Every structure is written in C-alpha cells, then in structure tokens.
Image 1 (cartoon, protein in one colour):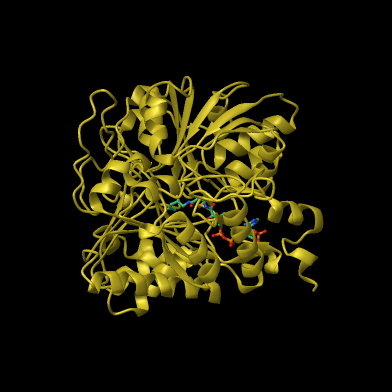
Image 2: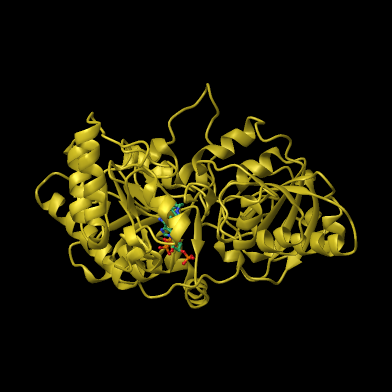
Length: 501
Ligand code: 0RQ
C-alpha cells in the first residue's frame, strides 16, 4: 500500500468493497471516473449483490463517456439505474434507454464538467474514482482516462477510491489536469500546440472527503480491434489523398493536428498514416487514443498525441506498460473539457473525422438515432470536433445491413450535425467537398459520388421531383422526405421493390 498510497492517512481508510459501497443508497447520484477505460469495477458489483439480496434502489450514474460491462452492463441488467449521462455504448443499457426505463440525455462531452460545477446536474453525492496511485499530499493519479473526474471530485461530497492493481503507479506524469474558469470569468485555455502541458500531473482533492479506499485487481475490459475492412480502407485512402492534395496546393497548412472518432473508419485512417510517406510529424488532438497511436509512435511519426483516454487491446496494453516512459513522452491525457474544448480545437485547426449513421442529400448528419427513434450510443465528442475543426470530415459506408439501408437519404431522421458544421463527406464510393457548393450542388454531387449505385436512381428521382414540384434553396417533398425510412420499417428494405427486382 505504501507504494500506491503515499499519503498515510488514506491508508487507514482501506476497507472492503461492501463497506465502501454502503455510502451509496437509493437515490444517490454517483459520479464515476471512466471514459472507455479507467472506470471503477468493484463498487458496481457490490450494488448488484445488494439488489440481488432484495434491496430496492435506483441510482443516477454519471461517467465521462462509455464504460465497460462492469459498470453499464451489470447495473442496467440489475435494474439499478434511474438516470445515465452522457454517452454509453452498452447493448443492454441502450435497450433500457430506448424503453425509457433508464432516463438518458445526450450531451456534448465538452460542456458537461462545467455544467456539473454549475450545479446543473444536482448535488454530487458520491464520486468513485479509479486511481493508479495517491501522492504524498493525497492528490490522485488517475489510470487510463481522465474524463470529467477532476470536476466530479471537486464537487463531490464523498469520494471512494478504487486503487487499480492492473495500472502501474508509473502512469504518474502522463496526465495534464487543468480545470478552466467558469463563466463569466473565463480566461483562454493556454494550449497552443497539441502536446502542450498546462496543468498539474494529478487531480487535486481534499483528502478528508475520501470515505473509503478499496483495492481492485480487475483490469479494464480489453478493447478489440479488427483489421480495417475494405470499405473503411477506401474511405481512409480518399481522406488522406484529399488532405495531401489540399496541402500540396497550399490551401491547407502542414501539420494540423488530427482528431479521429471511434469505429473502423477512424482506425483505418490512423492505419493509413503508417503506410503513407507524406504524413510524418503527426500531431493528434483527439478524444480517445487507441492502439494505432502506439504503432505510430513506434514508427517515430508522432510529435504529440493528446486525448482524454487511452483504450488499448490486451496486447497493446502490455506493450504500453512495458515501455511507459517512452510513450509518456508523447502522450498527454486531459480532462474531456480540454481534449474537446471548442476553443482549443478551433485554435489548433484540428482536422476532425467522425462517423455518421446517415447523411442527407443536403449534408445534415445523424450519428445517434436509428430510424429517427432508437438511440445508438450518443453524440459523444463528435459535435465538439465537427463544429470547430478546420476541416470537418463526415464519413460513412454508403449502405448498411447488406444494402437494405442507404446511408445517404433524402432527409435525415434525426439531426446531430447540421450542413453548416460539416465540410467534406466521404463514403467508399466517393468524396464531396461541400464547402463551396450550394445545397443543390451538394445534393447532386452526393447522389452521384457518395450514394451507393443501387440507390442513385431512387435518390435522383426524389431530388429532381423536389426541384420541379417545390423548388427553393433546399427543395424537399415533405410528404416523401422519409419514404426511404418508412419503406425500410414496413418491408425491411429501403429499395423500391425491396431490392428483389
Ligand atoms: O449495426 O452493430 O448491428 O452491426 O450501426 O455501424 O458501420 O459498424 O460503424 O461502429 O463506426 O459506428 C455512428 C454508431 C457508427 C458511431 C456510429 C448500423 C450498422 C451497425 C454500427 P450492428 P458501423 P461504427 C467522438 C466520436 C457518434 C459518437 C462519435 C458513433 C451499427 O461512430 O456512435 O462520433 N458515433 N464519437 O449496421 C441503421 C443506418 C445505419 C445503421 C449503420 N443508417 N441505419 N443502422 N448502421 N448505419 C470523438 C472521438 O474522438 C472519439
């Protein structure tokens, strides 16, 4: 314990998970660390045990973003969750949210630490934080994510620490903890390059607020990355060609930092950097860093990589911990209000790459709601980056479910990103730079270049009739704008004739 908890008074608070969890009761608002990685593992399991023993309780659970089965999965299955915010990606929890059994509101990740500090989310009853170590003064060294933890800890009435045996205390130094001022006293966040460190390597805390310390042997669930498929590779190739071309033409400065969202295409883009000789001195100013960032560092292609979390496969995690000092030199983990700060993203001129579920012919984007109604994961940081990046790329395969769904539709069934935030749209079929096109030009280009050939005639027919029959700046046939979606809901296929023709 001395090695991990260097502040002696906190060693007296080491206790069992059951004892620690006794601070959580029916109605407690639980604010936890965790942002794909770094979430607590023992406390949720204790709550489930109590529920199974017959205790009736519901808690509100607020994290940094998605967690693992050890939090969202087990708590949702046990019916313990009243409210959950923000982004999550657990199947069971998603289903409960869509039945409105769990209350959920989707937030831009950049804004919620400040909202919690302003008291908008109510009192922070208990914060549960996974830590790698505690310093001599009682400050906290987080594990592989920062998320909203600094603000949660600052506002919490009680704090429970889970000391993670799986994460070495040598992680100390990788984090850069900076809590910006709140309105109306906001000063600039002094980050001028992706790798700038502006804060402290630990989370400040009043140690008296710590009510329990538990030791956890459980590692984060490992991320699993498959090799990028052909569609993702085609999208990534066009994206990298485009940036190269614009740079060579002098329309894009060299060395702008990259943000790349979650999913296969994002990984394919990063994998593309490995093979391409044009991209050498890369800066990454993103939200979640994944395995490929380590590969790029190994190839000496990365100047700096900044994010709020590091999500690694089992193999990459071993590699990372073995050579921690070398990687620490390049990687900075920040609070999500800094990694996703609109101010900083705009200042650095981040090249933003995010994935859509569907995009409409005028460039509005739906990233979160299947067929308009069913929540998928949440907007996450995609809005922070798309609205503020110097070029905002929106990528998607042109079709889903084997062609039964066109990802280019007449009108999106839900809007996350508007045409005004999105710059360049790419599918495996082609790329459209919408930035200097009128909405009608965007529609024609998207249908001809980005839509899948099996949907082009249907889309063009809709568009041309809208132009003829209604006209206007963005012609729509309001009675038919969702006909693709309706056909899918009725027949299981968006194609006229169900694709069987
Ligand atoms: O369904 O899971 O049943 O197979 O949606 O689609 O193609 O595997 O794509 O994993 O990249 O996820 C937008 C959800 C894409 C994600 C979204 C079905 C498809 C499949 C998943 P199955 P893919 P991805 C922040 C980055 C918002 C948050 C964000 C996301 C499943 O990227 O959550 O950007 N984004 N965060 O079959 C119905 C459609 C569909 C569809 C695909 N049009 N209608 N279903 N699917 N298109 C910033 C960072 O820096 C991290």
